[in-house]
Amino acid sequence: MIPAIHLADAIRDLTTLVDTRPSTARFLAEGGVIIRRLVSRDDWLPPACAVPGETYRQYPLHRDAEHRFSLVSFVWAPGQGTPVHDHLMPGIIGMLRGSEAATAYDPGPPLRPLGRVVLRPGDIATVDGDRYDLHRVENLLQDAVSISIHCYAGDIGTIHRHVWDAATGARRDFVSGYTEWVTTPHLPL
Image (cartoon, rainbow, N blue to C red; front, side, top):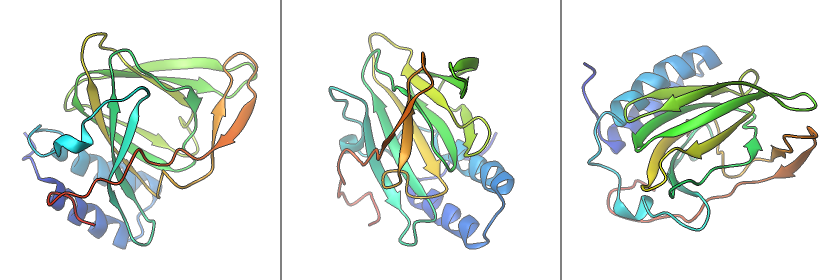
């Protein structure tokens, strides 16, 4: 069993990792170990970063000053999901609470589903920015909130990405932004 770590330890370890300028494969592998350790316990996320809304919420837990990585809490109300979207950078998803599914797509047109990954607490999945980058995510629970912790090799809330129409394969630009910056004693700024 991998020992759990706290948020500050995860940020320190991720910073040490990106300081080495890792390849995508190394970022995903070693970062995946860090995120798996972080989501192996559910006693560290500030309540302000777990509040659902009318649409899914994206709370920044840490944004590296040099934009080398970001750590984000995604909060899904019952039944919520995303449109099909891309990331354009490597990312690691760790399931903290609840359950979500990610359906990967081939860019088509039309978009063709490639498979579905279901995450439960403690599970990890990745996107690499080149392959397996296009997906739709949904909270599988119809009666409870689900929360996943995402780590990206960049500042995911500030880059230009795309939302894709599943039927036509057409895409449009978007910048996801963040729900809000939550300042608490638990979060390093």
